[in-house]
Image (cartoon, rainbow, N blue to C red; front, side, top):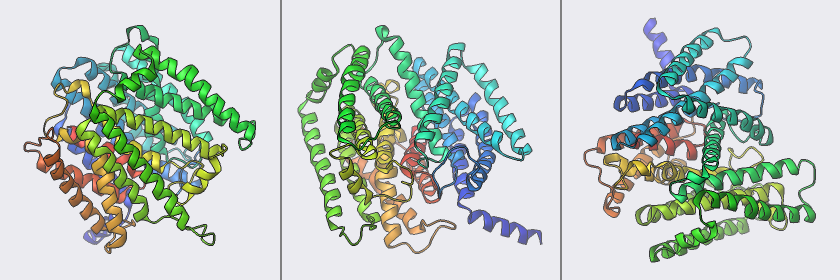
Length: 535
């Protein structure tokens, strides 16, 4: 009888995608701590256990409509996978910086880890505070995890570092209130934790460095990222609040939008960047892009690919007849853009990573500005963009913003932006670490694309409780392994030594996560593969 009950429980677990997703995340956490074990390891495991329990409470709140804000429907809360991202990134980068003897970035990585834990605990407290009746067991587990995290933070961080963590937490609270109010149904709680938490950390870093601008040192490329992200976000918040009080679709409002964008860009954002890099930003950017013949060739090649992507959008819209306005682009058509991204990023990673870093930041700014124009229907192109992009919507674009293309860009760019350059004197990491900048290309550009195409066309055996297929996951793993083999041939900086089994295991775990997660895979998968390859 007991055996039959256990078999039934096991079958129920395998058909519940949330439980399997949690199992995969726990496996990744244990893999990381099989390599890295320090004071923070127990805290991370305790945080994962409490996040698992809190995720169940968040899921109940979303189903009952008890959450304060409107989150993205047709997805679970995603608390567990989201809570682990920032702490694991911090721990992985800390290990690499410790090996290289870079004390400054080792301490910085500790702050990243502690900040991720603090944000995760805060999100857990929100769920427990609004759940009725009060979940006693979950509160007890959260209390133990919180005590462990707070005690460890007190032991390993200095007073100034603790203040920095609290500053990020304060920014996160206010920014969450603003973005979740202005953008209903755009995020799950887990996605909001990663996105708003990351932006809050960037804002705090920019404020700190701006206050010490006279002593500012470092690569101008990194300052360009900070100022571009924060400046684009401030533009969006400013116009969202402004157009609450005036109609955005008129020619007068559109003219005002263009004028204010120019004024804020030229009058605030560019001087802000100039303050940090001690040069005129436009002159620096021109010198940077024209530094070598290779960069000019790469820029011309990327302009060609951007034109090709535009042609695909126009061609697909021309095929849509007036009788089929509800027609949506197929999975195969949407994956064309993934292939274009692979064709864009691989040459940049091989020949000039700094140029790719700057170009990806510029592309993010352009995407955000175009989305503002589309969302507010700014004339003369706002309504046209709305019509063109509607064809490529999927079920994840349930809010007022279309974010899937921005998530795709972030997914392939984040491993490049997060790469700990100062901790790699030779410009690359040994073993599997050499593939870290390629994490987004492998997970999203190759793995997710192949899984979707083969799964939707040839897949017959579905993973229990999901729409994903076993054939899609298997071909995804196989395709990523082939991609790694090709990188060994074409990129001379990649030297994997004896880490092949770890790479195959990492790719397999991330591919299983892709099969079971309901979160934005373009964002989640590259970050987990980044962590696994980094260690």
